[in-house]
Image (cartoon, rainbow, N blue to C red):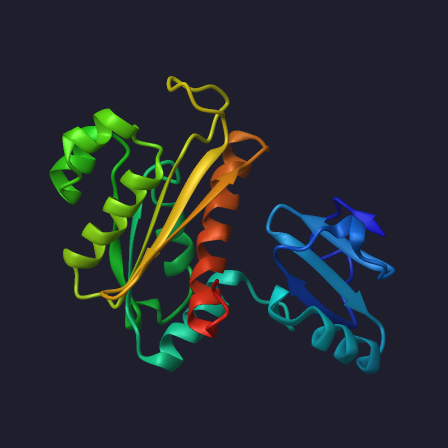
Length: 222
């Protein structure tokens, strides 16, 4: 196993890009563990195909593409539009989405609401909710997501709020992150504790959000 190398360490062969797997549990010989997931490389197609079937929805790509490209393809295929609301990631999720050519076909835009004042002003998050639960909470994340959906013509909305670090003004752990996805019929909220540096936590939060969208669109979100 090879851990911590750059993503392009193995330039040739077959690749499976995965997210949500523990690299230590894998027995494949060429494994690259990075902040955005685990990449597994194969020299022959037969081994690659067997692993792809075995790993199932943990595989987000079987070629060298990023998560935002995969999500964009899924949204485009289904004719759906996405809106986002971001706090701790401060627009990073939006930036990743629009890095993909043609993203205007499915991405309507986003709200960057770093302060509580903007959460209230732009997304109508109630002050009472912020005071009772705090900006980094399931309740506020849910409210941000629902409002982002209501304020746009999107079919799906995603919201992120968290404490990226390295310190916190709230009596909550550094790395605490909530991610919500909603449609006009359902709302999901995930809670995570991210244990990396500030900017790594921010990137990982966007990767988790993109993966949440991917799982929802594939119908494997529990």
